[in-house]
Image (cartoon, rainbow, N blue to C red):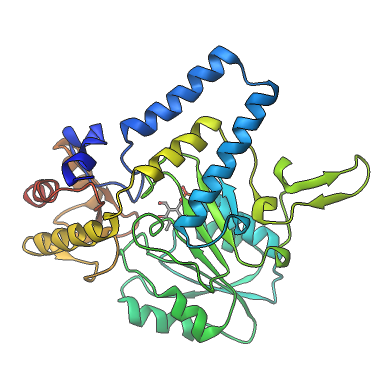
Length: 358
Ligand SMILES: Cc1ncc(COP(=O)(O)O)c(C=O)c1O
């Protein structure tokens, strides 16, 4: 696939400089077609009978396999979830931590991770990393570890300043269980779960899938309780009697997902060209350098797809003005910053449109 062919997948790119994958990736026509085709079939043929159930189960298996490949693992370690937030809730709910136990997190986490962490009942220790580069941030996180720490809960790529944390080094240095929020990494940079314990994926961001889709990687399935069993958690169940959970991470599946969404996300994942990560690095570097000629750039070089900068004026108003001028970016709430998301589909012209408009 050439770069021009890749751009042609996404109709929105004909109109605007769409630099918003950190929130929602652009939707490819083929992804929308897969969703629409399934809905048409549902309308025409109904949603029942063995063929429908078999097709739904096959779609779940196909998406699980695609997610496993994306994370360099096997499908038995992957649960289908509706979002990163959902994945974080599954983990924190299943761990059942107590007030005397501690979680170490950072001040640069999205509520998708921070919400479940603070609702968990454990004591939370917060490393201040918002203004730090990747190495100092790692040190700040390690400094919060105590003998009572039971979990590290951090993003692979921070949604605010775009910094990519070396989560593998964090695991290696502390030896502690680690929950990694992969919302800004999965699909943007290569991910290998390796020795990490839990890893979440959002389908609607860098993977350009439909909304309310995602996944959760669980390394040791038996070590996590199924706190919120869905229909898919059961291997067998005798009403009024015993429930036997499924052997793999499927037991954590958060419930029925729209078949159209399952197929849409699988289609979207299949569209990504093999050169995507190289191009993403290149375009983020170009964006960073080009913006640096105009404004102060917050994101250090060589991180992931997010490029955060300090605009002149109120960031919310700047983002709204840029939107009006056909440049789709977002401000980072509670900061003076605006954030651009550079994907494998982003052209130099998109970046130049942003730079001349800020
Ligand atoms: C780092 C991070 N975590 C979690 C989320 C929430 O993702 P989801 O909507 O998939 O739960 C976001 C969304 O912006 C994010 O940037």
